Image 1: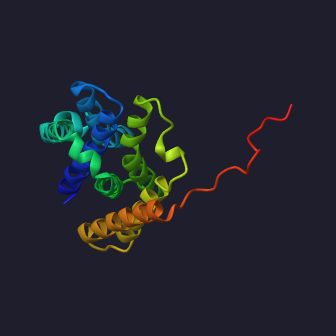
Image 2 (image 1 turned 60 degrees about the vertical axis):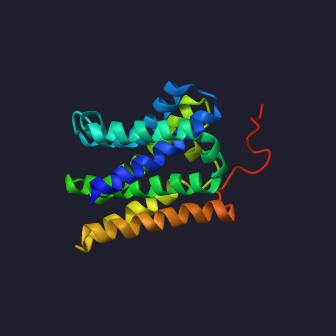
Length: 206
């Protein structure tokens, strides 16, 4: 179940990262690199934090092949993909939900405490996107207005709560992923943002 969720999430994030690379006018190599970074970055960070050496994404060829293939498809058909802006947003939200909840479940399987699993799950969900934005010399989306990390954390908390109540891991993870995706999409649709500093409060007093 976790493997399936990770593969679907990987494809979603690879598509998101590749499209960002196309918009930045990178060449085909840059598109594949950015797609793989977005898709695999969160999982690699998770495995490093959990002490899984080497990270699964670097030793399991399907992860690399699926990510690279998705990036190449986006590169080849980017005019069509670019017109599907809503679909790309849904793909990114789906990747966030799947990676955050699968990462949390993986951390719990390895015996980490609930609060640690929540933090690792959230990091798994947002890590690849943060690396993508840094490579494009942008402020990571997670540090800006839109509700992103909080949506990932919500899904992680649901997985941990289900684990504490001894509910079946598969259904709980699926529900948690759906809640994360819904929260992210609602934030985009309704324009929900985390609080910002008041106007003028960022001026340093001399």
